[in-house]
Image (cartoon, rainbow, N blue to C red; front, side, top):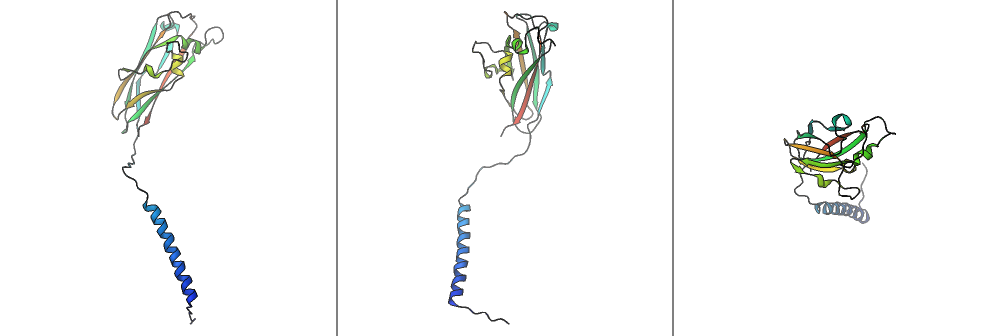
Length: 192
């Protein structure tokens, strides 16, 4: 059997090594004990948006909406079928629907003549959330399409009515061949 010799030097080295290991463990413990956290909650779940009714508007001669002063509008019912509050946003796009882009007004030109006369969510106006791009005091479909509108919140199980009305400018000079399709896209994101 091998004989183990202990010298003062080997014992001193062993004691210093153990001390260093203990000290480094103590430093790590001190750093970790300084961290505190209170009131944190982790939650799962979704905010699911359900849309009923029409989500688009067609502006053309067949429904009379191109006549100066004529109005067209639509309603949607938004429902949160999830278990978490949701924040509802609106994004609007439009395309020319007359099929003749060279001989008449573009979709942008037509949209600039359609005044946004009503934009409501849950019976309250949210029209003030849309920027007047030209600063002329008139908010149009064009302005609405340039903005992403924060509509409001929707609690779990809640249903709210969304309403939009567009009115053709009284001085509009549009031809019977002009027209556009507007699509109103609503999204809900989970509130935290």
